[in-house]
Image (cartoon, rainbow, N blue to C red; front, side):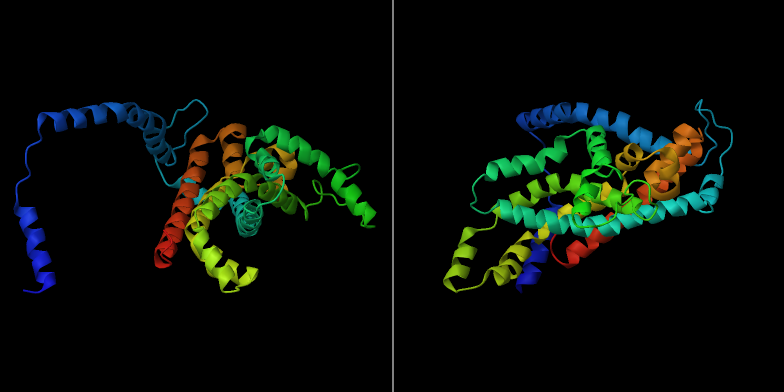
Length: 313
C-alpha cells in the first residue's frame, strides 16, 4: 500500500470513529470559555452586527431624519449611480488611495529602516515620529491650516526663500487634493513605522552577518534580505492603508469650509455625512455606506488573493 493510500485509510478511520464524550473537566472548560467570551459576543452583536444589518435594510428605504420609512425600493442605488457628486467623491477618494498608499508605504519603510539602525537619539526620534498617531485630528488640522496659509504660512515662507510665488494650498482648486494627500501621508506614517519596525526586528541577524561575510552591499542586501523578509508585514500594512484611506473624512472636514470640500476635496465618507446630517436623507446616506463597504470588501479580497499567490498572507 502506498503512503497516499495509507493516509487516506487513516483519515477515513478517524472520520468513522465516534467522538468520545467530554468528561466533566472538559465540559466545565467549554462552559467557562463561552461565559468569558459572551460579553464580547454581545457587544459585537449589539453594536456591530445588528446595526450593519439595519444599515443594509435602510439603504433600500426612504428613511428620514425621524427614523421613519415608508417604501422599499432600489431608488437610492439608482439615484446614487446617477449622482455627479458621487463620482466626484469617488474620483477624489481614488486619487488619495493611488497617491497616498505607495508614498506612505515607501516613506514609512525607509524611516523604519533608519530607526532600526544603531544611531544616537533613536528613542527620541521614535517618539517624535509617533506623535501624529496620538494627536487629536482637530489639533492636526489647526497646525496644517497655519502651515499652508497663503499669506503667512511656514510652507510658503520656505518657498519664498527659493523665490517661489506663494501657493494657495487651501484655496487653489488645483492644490487642494495635493494638500489633503500631504496631510494624509504625514498623519499615517506613525502607526506604519511602528508595525514595520517590529517586522524589521524579527528578521534574523544571522542573515545580515552572512551577507557581511560575503561582502554584499547595502542596496543588494535590502533587495535580497530585507524586502523579501518584510513582504508579509508590508502586505498587512498595505491592506490597512487601503481601508484607512477609503474611509478618510476628518482631514477634509476640518481643513476646509463646506463650499471648498464639496467642490474640490469631497470624499465618499464626506458625501455620506452631507446627506445624513445636512440634507437629512438618511436612506440615501446608508446606500452610500453600503457601496463603500462593498468596494472596501472587494479590494481587500483582491489583496488577499494576491497575497496568497505571492505566499505572503
